[in-house]
Image 1: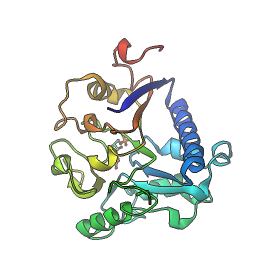
Image 2: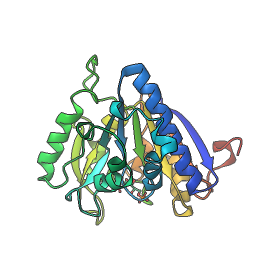
Image 3: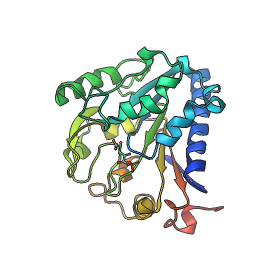
Length: 255
Ligand code: 6PG
């Protein structure tokens, strides 16, 4: 069962700083232990301030960029230069500003035919460094997975009552939510093989859903984020006070 920790930060700025801190620490730890640091990035608006900090000297200088390998947890089926692209957002926020080797950046090809793009990304995730060369299992083990949650309880592009929730074999599928358009998303087998999942959630609008995901009755079909529980990994919730405001005192000791 995944070990879960919850950190409440005063505001969105402190949330981004804490997230960048965790990223830098995990990068150093993974690079020292295994020579690589594999990351799956989330899209959406929330992680952008965190990503922007990664390019700031105070963090960039601590990160062994040549050993960092970027993947994505999901992507919209749009070209990389589309304003909706998760890759495009991360590229502008930090990738173009840091010395990461281009071959270490493995984006989902949102511009391709979706099913072909999903199959191609499964092949990428089934190779080193996502799939450890020594691995006996056939699941990629991502060191650091950044996730957000939507107001409807989705995470990555695992939307409520969507077909992808039941997927136990495929690593990447085409999925769709209410009005989201086609998406590419990793499935629970990938998320739940991760070493570390970090949910980054900000704002009062998400407070009710954060409390539902962490403390509510399990209702995975309706609240997909509840099913993220890495078998051998940890889950860290990074919340600002607004997003954590509906959690019980029991869930947030010391705050
Ligand atoms: C995406 C994300 C998605 C996101 C949530 C929260 O592609 O949009 O992967 O799962 O994390 O929708 O989005 P916001 O951070 O914009 O609220």
